[in-house]
Image 1: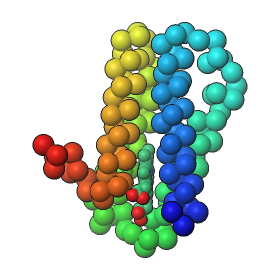
Image 2: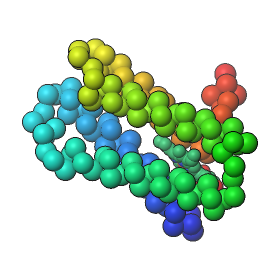
Image 3: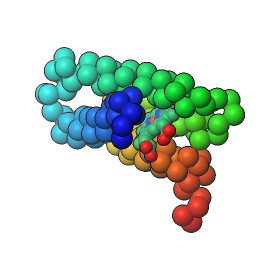
Image 4: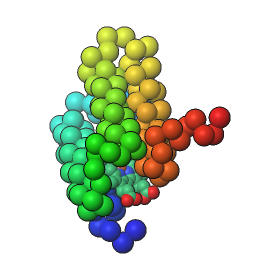
Length: 128
Ligand code: HEM
């Protein structure tokens, strides 16, 4: 991986999902750690870097989002990942909804990675 922007992108991708899984486990255990300021701020810093690196990668590759279905799938997936994450960590009133949203977000995230690697938005249909 000789492109530093791609390295940044993939690093923030890995930090995003590991932090997301970690925070979910803390929620399940009602941990006091969740009140730590760094744990509230760092995901936003990381996800901002993830999106900035994504925008630069699109520019570097000369891709047009309007005519590239796998990029469109990634954007929709990212929006879903954020919405499910907000449901899991902010809006959910019960543990059941929190857990379902958390698991849903992890599945959506796996789909985005599969699309990123295959460059095919229908990647999960091909393995059926
Ligand atoms: C949670 C969201 C995202 C995840 C998990 C993710 C994951 C990845 C991964 C794993 C790669 C490396 C693929 C490879 O080298 O085989 C990659 C590359 C890339 N991603 Fe993302 N990405 C996300 C969001 C985005 C967004 C929103 C965009 C832009 C719309 C984007 C654009 C790109 C581009 C252009 C590449 C380089 C593809 C290449 O030239 O090989 N990514 N992404």
